Length: 255
Image (cartoon, rainbow, N blue to C red; front, top):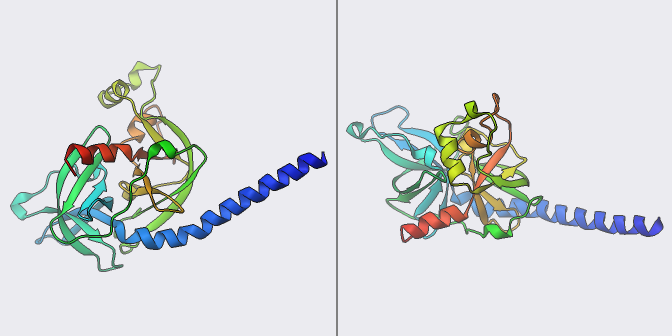
């Protein structure tokens, strides 16, 4: 019994040291990644407000590329009134708008790539998904309520509670729809998190707390339509698209 208690105590101490180390790393990591987190939306000179927030994005590659969800930039622009895609750089109550163009779209995995028309921003590093394990703790940073209270990035953290298929087969055929059938035909896995994201978080990076390396893209809408198709009231569970699909899209465009 004493031997068991000793082993338990050692394991407990190791866990506490590891958890505390992560907690101490997050503030430092945030200072590195926050300059790479941007708002995503549209800009129209004749509109009030001129900038409309739609979601979150993060900078990758050469500093001119921004990753977000495809559904964030899915709407049609009003070209007659000079509406353009834009990113919003955090500056509290006075965000700066930078015009971008949508250069790549992967509707199947809900990923989009935007390109800055001018300037560069600090880029985040993309990780490898084969290193991700269930039970590990990660964080994501974005804009859960957009620019309502100013463009201040908000951070949440939680564990990867499951790595599971994007769509779950249903026994009741009345619950099937076209989108669910398509995803069942081409299944892939997503990260399920025990942290709560909000609609404005769509496109936020999911990253390693200690290193800031990105392993996924937060998805608030697209995945829920498949994973929680049978629920009348969607849960508070958050999902993330593995970063490998961002890598694939970048490669397909020679980026």
